[in-house]
Amino acid sequence: MMRHFLFSCLGLVGLLGCEQSIQSGCRSVSETVDVNERSHSVEPYSPDSARVFVFEYDFDEPISVLVNGNLIAQKQFETSTNGLAGRLKVKARPTDEIVLKTTNGCAHFQLRDGYKYLYINRLNNKDWAITYANYGRGYL
Image (cartoon, one colour):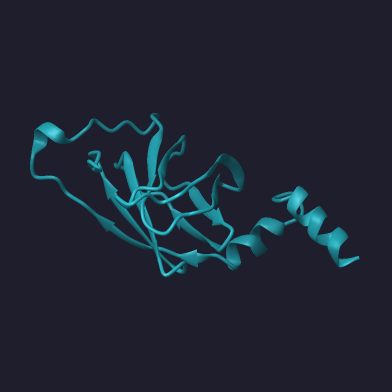
């Protein structure tokens, strides 16, 4: 009986209010903004363009990105020796609710306005951190 309810809840996220219980188990994130003083490397930002979610440290698993309860992107990641796991382009508007789900948990946050790049880290498989920026970082 419990298995059937869980399957129904996962299959009907948002329709039966199950989305609330999924987000309530998610961690909040710490957020910072990285300002680049060199104006030539700053990329133009448009609220209608896709955001670049850059997953850096401690991601060796599948990651799902939900925007306002809708699955937008999903990919298997593996962190390389340079600290980069991978990137996803995500179409989301400022103030959308974002949920990042992995096999080891999830995090939720409200998207900030004005930034193209989100650098996402998870330390010790539990503490999530996001750095907003308008320039791409180089990885060697």
